[in-house]
Image: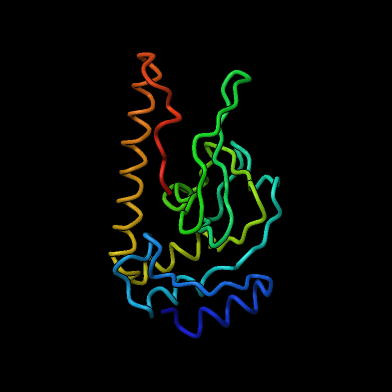
Length: 175
């Protein structure tokens, strides 16, 4: 069950977002107290973005981390005029986190909103201040666990494409 603060924040920032959320079910918040989740959610802004919009381009300076509340976002890359969807992310998935850890980080992919979506957007400088002020280690461990899964999935996709085995489309790159 979500706290009242979540619902108030959601109604105020995204009145068209009718669903109640239980942030505790999102992997990134696993094992965190409601108070810790409330601090993190409270540090962000909820944005409604129409489908087809480009959130950022490869090469843009990364300033934000995104958590999908509702909708879907595609992570895409291009190389020598070839474009490929690397992942389709949905509710509970986060992206843009690399910019948290590297100052002046340039985005390595494009992020395209596939359908009308609600995103919790947290500025990197805000997150980094929270980390410095004892953000729960569990939150950082959750981020690391997801990143490790992504690395394993990317390695498998690379090996399959390198050695012309089954299509890389069979592998789901999770949020």
